[in-house]
Structure formats: C-alpha cells, structure tokens
Image (cartoon, rainbow, N blue to C red; front, side, top):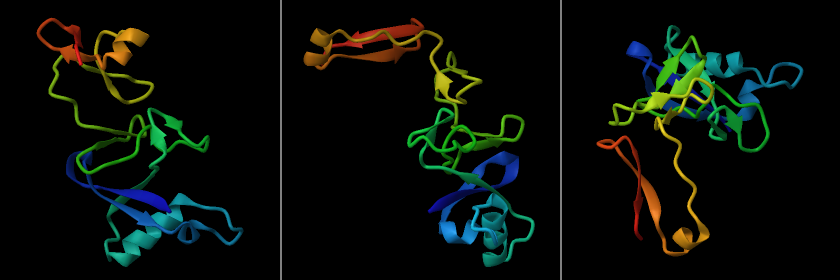
Length: 141
C-alpha cells in the first residue's frame, strides 16, 4: 500500500490515506506518484486538493527497508509539508531549545544524548531532556 498526505491551509497535513499500489502503476507497470494523486482527487471530487506521497518506512530521510525514502519523514495529521525541503516535519516539541536538523528534518536537542553504560541499561536508567539546565539528566529506573 502507498500512503498519501492531504495538505491543507498553512501547509498542514490534514489527512493521511492508503492507496493500493496497483493504482499507482502506469502502462509499463511502473509506480507513479501522480497516478495516486489523480486517483484521490477524482475519488473525493477535489480537483484542487494537494496530495503528496509519503512512506511509513521513512524516518529521518532513511527508508527502513532500504527503499527510496519519501520526503524525509512519514506524514501524520498536524505535520507540516515544507515545499522548500520537500519534507514532512512534525510539530516542534514544547522545548524552545530544540532545533530542526536540516538533514533529517527531525527536532533535536542542542546537546547529543549521552550513551548509557551497560550497568545503567541493566538498572533501567534513561536520559531525559531538562529544559531548565539545557542538558540531559540521568533518571534512575
């Protein structure tokens, strides 16, 4: 199944639907995004609707199964479609210090999360972002 995101006002994703892959195939049997878009516009009688293909297997610009990644991240309702980056971007977390990674189009802390030691893993410890100190805080499990 192929996934498509409907883009509404302010480039916000307002719907995500699945379309059978056979709908996307052209006369040579090659999948074409435009065929899925045309199908959805006709199905819903919305000739001016904006649809973009997305993939459940794409996160951070990487396709988890080794295929072609679509638009950096899988779309979800409330995400933004950024036409300049040709990417779906999740809403910014309520963390003012976090920044958008331009390569992955994912929000990240300004400090890389430290790696847990095996002992910390065994003790079910984890790191949690602390916005007040602008750093990761080790939480005892």
